[in-house]
Image 1 (cartoon, one colour):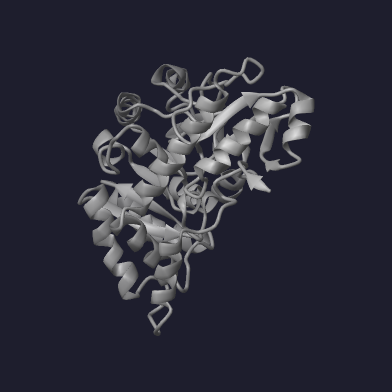
Image 2: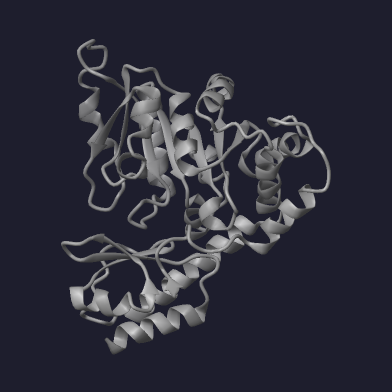
Length: 339
């Protein structure tokens, strides 16, 4: 069965599996003291800027929880969109682990703006109210949209003007970077992002993400302890680090994301003229949200695997990946058109 459900469902990239095989030839020190983990610090600085401090972790929820927890105290709050993975799909992990509150705001396209956040500053210093400390955005968003450079910078500037910090959930950050034709540094450190959860698993890695701090050494220092308490400190960290070495050095992050985005555009073009398939949000990365009829969902899911994210619509999400082929897309479009 062909899958358009998630970029989590596809195989790992062969070159990243090869990096694991090559790393598996000898003994190495544990808990990040190995030569591979030490060396990727400079590699991250090459791609993200000299002030970047990067830490491998196992998964996306672990990356978000440890990154944000390192920047906050229990009486403080995170502000994010109500569609954020942090709010919807992480089972209250941040609240349980850090004891902080999430303030989730409605958006039309998954993106926050400073004007939405400003009212929460009214009670700064009031001991009866949680204190906003972190703004968390997803790039790309959970609706497949992408913040422009100007939008991210505006949020970072607003955060810093009010002694707050900007976190980016970058599970699909690579897709946003290629969508905007930018670089990893130009769309993170250069815009004032304080901490990034940099995704690997959804873009070809077997497992692994990285938490990257920019110009925040005090949070990076705290992170060593937060990561251990959060059970995200890998004993055999070299197997995470070697993937990131290949991912960055061979620009697999870019090749994979570019292909996934191109396949999404191919799918979008294939269905955009079908009146019965309204596309709900701009297709800017590798996700397409559409409204389908229940009979069409039933027919398509006999041969193609995808998620219905809202049964009331029903609204479906179609995801493409580095592993999606033009033939996969064309067969899916043909099945939709013939239904």
